Amino acid sequence: MARLLARRRSSGRAPSTGGSGFRLRDVAVAAYGPTVVNATGHGAVMPVLALRARELGADVSTAATVVALLGVGMLLASLPAGALVARIGERRTLVAAGMVDAVVMVAAALSSSVLVLGIAVTLSGMTWTAFLLARQGFMIDAVPLAHRARALAALGGAHRVGLLVGPLLGAVLIHLADLRATFVLAAGLSVVAGLMALLMPDLGAAGRDQQQAAGGHLGVWAVLRAHRRTLLTLGTAVVVIGASRSVRNGLLPLWADHVGIPASTTSVIFGVAAAVDIAFFYPGGWLMDTRGRTVVAVPVVLSVAVAALLLPLAHSVAAVTAVVALIAVGNGLGSGIVMTLGADAAPAVGRSQFLGGWRLCGDLGNTGGPLLVAGVAAVAPLAAASIAVGVLGLVGTAWVGWWVREADRAARPGPTLPARGVSRS
Image (cartoon, rainbow, N blue to C red; front, side):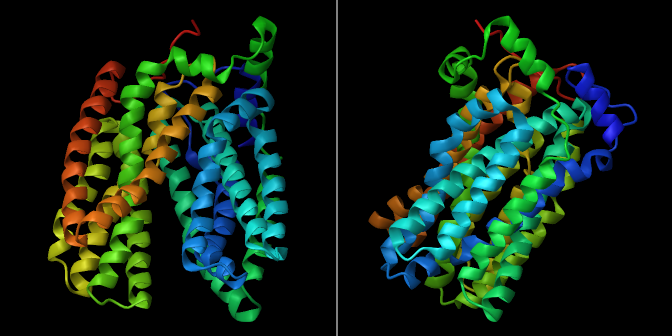
């Protein structure tokens, strides 16, 4: 692994399109190790954020706001994180994000007020976005184009594994100590993830030096303006994908409660969905690399649309589980799709700045999905809200299918997608 990455670092060029002799396990530790470790920490904390806020005296609505601040932090940091990666590189960003996240997790554990907890959660969301952007940039440099989708799908899968393992570890710690122990665990894992990042080579160093010598770093807004058409078309498709993925977290638990399914059973249903999700991430990556991106992007949105239309008919545990599993299949197949589309569209010059804007598109969708459910449910019965989400999902499927297919066509000939860039003008 070290020799392979060192050769690419010294070349200062993107990996070849063919990927002859490349194996994902050659970069597994450097590529996926920090992600699994960091995601495990986040996975341990996320289920108890609202409980920690309640423990500090927050009412239900305030506790929900504290949870939402994680997404707010991610939104706020998308563009600045892209600029940071462009200036200091992926490795330094990963190390810095890990250490800062460790500090804010300790602050969350020691906090005596909801305000301090909310600030810590917001900062944690910001570090998480920086971490994800740096991971994506490293993978673009380290992996040949012929393996790009599989590698990024596996990165998404590593994230899912961490989010699955984290709550299990957190439950053990809560049983042995209290809620604050999960934040301490997250802090420790953030440090470990940051230290693991020190082992990876800085593949983008040569490119940053050349760009600095050629006239300095590009501004974020200059890059986004230069690529505004891509962001307004394919980027909007990413917003739709993000919204579709996040809908299940708001709609499905509400429906399960509506039909009388206990919270403990709902948790088990979501555990089954997580297992299905993980099982499909590598087949989805293989399909993207061999059949194009459309064949995976469309099922991500379509599965949610169909599931939302079927949900009003689901009144038993088995039926709700089937609906959730349908969404999980689409979501699993689409593991890494947003990162892959971003990597395909990113320019050679100003890549990190562009990916920050791309990340913002995904975060807008992730934040907007639950808000859409809440807004429709506020003025209509839950069944009607589900049908409305399904109809909107069908419209979104058409939009996603059109623009991702256009991207696939632009990438021909060949089954794999070469990198496409736009000049800095």
